[in-house]
Image 1: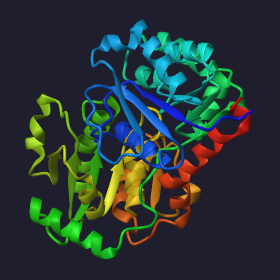
Image 2: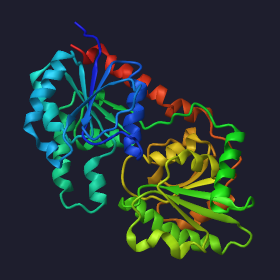
Image 3: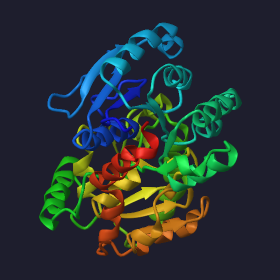
Image 4: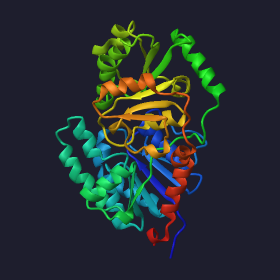
Amino acid sequence: MSRTLHIAALASYRVFPAKMGGQKGIACFYSYLGVRVPVSFISTKNNEFPAGFPATFIPLLGNSFLRYVNPFLFFPLRKILLKDNITHLILEHPYYGWLGTLLKWTTKVKLVVHSHNIESLRFKSTGRWWWRILWQYEKFTHRRADLNFFITGEDEQFAIKHFKLDARRCQTITYGSDAKESPMPSERSVARQVLENLYGIGSNEKILLFNGTLDYKPNLDALMIILNVINPALMKQAGFNYRIIICGKSLPANLDELKAYQDKHIIYAGFVDDITVYFKGCDLFINPVTDGGGIKTKLVEALGYNISCISTESGAIGIPQSITGKKLVLTGDTDWEPFTKAIIDINTQENIPNAFYNHFYWGNIADKAASVLKNTALID
């Protein structure tokens, strides 16, 4: 006999205020899912939970790293699941796999793992020696889940093959965009004027944007490619007027806020409160990221604002070219000459197809997730 659907989401780190891509992914997903099914959101005590969010907030987890191995979390969590008649427990990332498995065994809850990338491979790409240990734990967690949500189809197929998962219990639930349609030209024009005034950019200069957390190695590597390869090549192009804006926090101290590049068309904006202005106001988003796994949330956001994008193939994993039309140009992962040429040649007047919004609009993503969760085969 089926039960009324009620979701408990377990996020092991601070999500609110949602500023980074991973935080936005969780916050947006539940802001849309919460108006479709009841959601209890369990997370750390240092969250600043927003008023009016469609979920019940439960600040149960401590802020110490020891929260990941705290056995005493089992009892209050089990009490919550039973008292609120929770049907599905969604783990954001696999880190609480041990806890989710115990709760699955001792309650009627269905365990769902919401994967944002293959975590062990992400840490392998950043040089962490312990990635193999995480690999085994990640595999353990996914194999004990009743349902696995993956951020890209590529991750889903990888996990099915290498973690030996049942494909019937796997779904691609991608990162999304709030946009249902392209912004109006007037919005773009206003945002462009803001950037021109803020940074002294000429009306005849193309604005190129790169955005990302800069102490994350794949993003830092991409920044160094921009500074040392792409920008020098662009500077040699006679008649090509441009500025490159770099947004993102945690720039390494040795780069000294990119002061050495200020006379070389580079603007370092640092962390900005409203990245929307930068997406709407730029002409082109560049994404020379070659590693890191998962979907590149900043690329989804840029395309959602109808911005022309140049990306490496690895940087565009999870974004079907069939729905981006001519708005997204891909080059090989280290093919910087064609990458640079594409920056110069791309027609920024092309529009993103409506198929992009059908695929990436958060409302449609939440509808799919709710439908899968409501499947009576997954509820006793």
